[in-house]
Length: 144
Image (cartoon, rainbow, N blue to C red; front, side, top):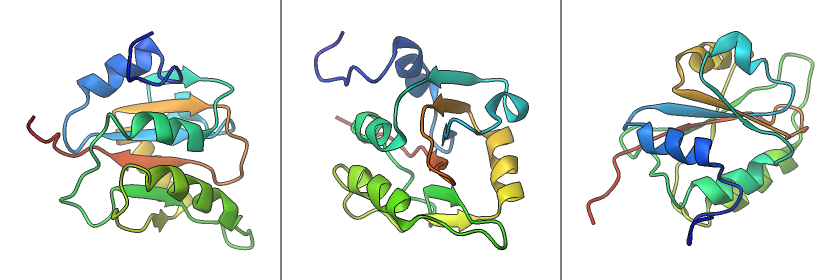
């Protein structure tokens, strides 16, 4: 354990976040997401909810301020519906460290899969909410 770092952050996840550069993307994937199908760099966070992981990760992770939407989620497939409580719970966690972040962008399922293929890492979680995946684009860490 380290002081100031959430116990939800595993050593592997901490090392992965530290290796990411500005513009790199991380997918926080729900338990049903085919992470290994789309990306060879997969880190496990089984049993953990994405809203909790967002709260743990974002104090350590600068979101990209040079893009219109550093947060991306999957849009519902035609004929399906989204549960607005999923995004609401994510935003509650996100706004604790990023109160002025741009709204979450919604993209189609296939486009989301393409982004996952190019992402630096896919973090497989225990999230069971439908359309619970979220992509974060890392920004430039401010100088101390």
